[in-house]
Length: 143
Length: 353
Image (cartoon, rainbow over all chains, first blue to last red; front, side, top):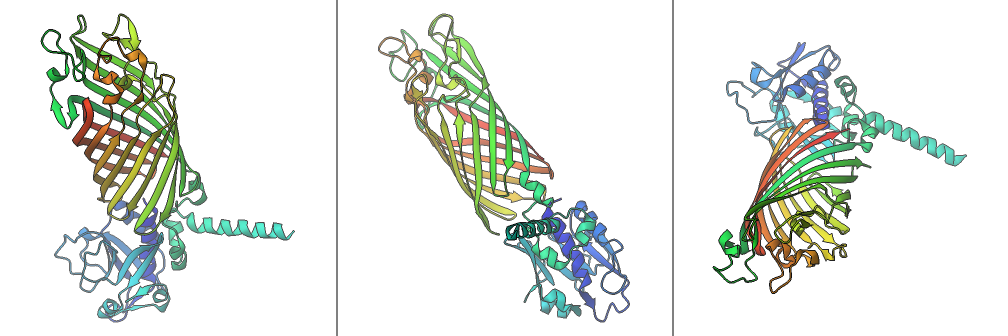
């Protein structure tokens, strides 16, 4: 597995630590993270996320492939979406620069000078009623 | 004493960097903070310092086939090139001996050593097998096959990434080709009874110290484009008083990365080769027409060529890479009459340590 993918998986896990669903997820005990990746990436991410506390609460993260998902709290998109029946309008979306298959996404991963960076679309986050920690915002490029 | 303290601080600092960069397992990556992640160089090896000594062993197998004749870009038939005594006049453009098909097979072992992420040295050792079918108007040699086989010229090269950004990278390389390939291959030809010196095409090396040079730029991303300029500069003359012509080419390639493991490419190459300088006098015969075959005339080498190619690269794992390519000339303008290239292909297996 490429190093860049391992770093991306670690970023995805870290994002979950700094996001708060203000209203609809009041008693959040689990998150479904849908990933549109190869099995190796999915497995690597699952191991990162396994039994690790997210934020101050003990939230369980379930990693599932997008093609098998029925609902997603977060989704990592890497290809055009084939599963048209899945509603992602209230999902925190993440995609890569140069492979943007959604018109807007909360997080955009991009490479600069051999480092992986991320951009946050605040407008999209507000639309989803998602609070993003200032700790995360200060490290991100925002728009 | 102050100097020692500084060195210790330097070592600690290096150690810290390696700790940050040396993550590999999911558990190790899970421990990284966002600040750590922002500092990771994604082009570096995840194994840190160890990768700066990365060794690569590559085996390549290349095949090329030549058949048919061109003079400039005009096609000639075998009858045009074969001199038939009593039926036509001998000229500088017909010959009593005509190679019909040349097949070349090359096994190459290449060992590369990454001194740093930007700088690599490598040694390439080829083993060459060549077979040429002939027809001739010489009695007893109407059809015959000549074969030569052995070590080719060994090349030591260095490659350096001049600069790299998120969008592109520049690379230059240069080296020295050592004349380890034989230029004294012999075989039974119609020129005389027994074994004689074989023509230039059947020799395994150049006999001279040669300088391979190249420079290339490559864009990054799933759809990438590369342009590469390369040359083989020959120096001096060999022990048989000739020097192969210099080669120059420019190659452009479009590469599509279908996923992390598989990429496919297509490209075009324009190449120019010079004729041979000097002459091996053992290859000529007495009389008005000293060249018994086109491949014994040093002026009938070289020319211009445009080829298209396609291939794929499969990264089977972090330490195993497989690649294959096929190319075919779409235009050739040769110093002829000269046998033309039909196609060439190659496969490559690389193992990284």
